Length: 586
Figure 1 (cartoon, rainbow, N blue to C red):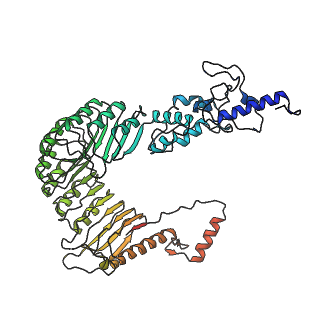
Figure 2: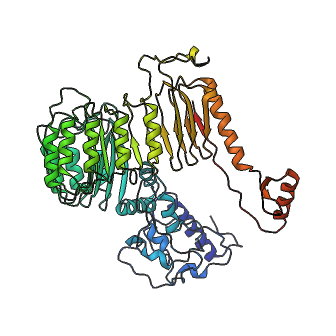
Figure 3: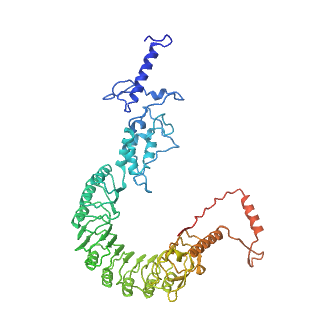
């Protein structure tokens, strides 16, 4: 083929070179030759000026995508001065995207990005910092998929895994331990790890975590469904002793421990759930602040709780929060707990202790006078025990939970709310309940509730600071009056005997009302009163004084409208405060 007369040999050679270059780009792989002089890149240091300096104001052809993120960050040989309007956005630490502080320094591989003008993004290229900002908002599974796009994205994803300090993943039932190990090896700087496991797991999981996360401080392992842990007490103790920087350990499904002796100078929080029949339970943790033990609901549990609390008094004197849920809780255990006398104790939760009585409350009140939270749910205390609590803890107690206490009446609840001015949370579920009442059927739900003689109780609560009130299962409650301006969460689940005409809610800040398994008429009354309270707050009627300031009178509507028009004409724009609509669950 002969060359055309209007095409010069130089132009033809340039066209052939461009065609060959386009064919190389179609192979979806990076260029192995220098883009400036054409020589091989291996061991090559080019001294020619950058072609970006000679680009016209309006580019005519896009540049090929760079093969690595560092190339996009330092594509120009002459760095531009940093922009004052767009400072470098630092990446967040966690892959779970919770609200965490930003890194104090940018990643080591992206430090050159600070010398790039972020106002100008090269055509066909993805700015390094922009790509980082996009990928950091992906969950771990999305980040794994993004790493398959190209080499540049894969390198950026690898850097994000390397600087991550928090990881939350769910391990599916069909996944093996290699799946967890492959993810953890990507995060050498991991500090906080949370696993949700759908299948049984053993000490191999702990060994993988110990090997892959040398700087781990917080470990949380949760189970889903019927998954249990096959980790023994000795294996758990070995893991704790080897992880000298571990501060928090939370684990569910611990039914195979058998017995353990945990020794650590760094542990401050320990949560163990589903434990059963422990032969020994020793905590040699001098800096332990929070301890939570939840035993399985089996009556043949042989754990010695008295010996356990005696050991805590000798080795863990800094305890501030204690939560124990067990059917073996008794008055003897409470006496042993009060004999230890933890001076810094602020939260005490003894759940499902049916043998805990008013005498136990008297012992607790005499030994711990600075409690902020007290949970005696499932105990046998009466209104007398509530009176003891109010006499000793009126200046400190802000959370009181006495659910599943059948000996408490509405009078005791009213007295407690009146005598505890700092109370913010109150749980009285299944206290004022009728033991002979059956679950209402769908037909009974649509009809008016029938009063039952002998079990009808009334409750009047007026409190300035109460924010959450739970009355779930109070089937004997037929009248309720609430005057709580700060109340936000109200639980009336299964209050089947509550009469709509006997319900008064003076709570303008209500956000959530749970009325599940309640009568339809009651749900309508709740919705009506909530809307009326909201309208009264949004459109208050102003009050004016007479000329001699002798009496406050209600201003007429015409005067109120004129006043509002004058305020609008002043030129000051006031931001409208949007009130949140109350959600009624039924």
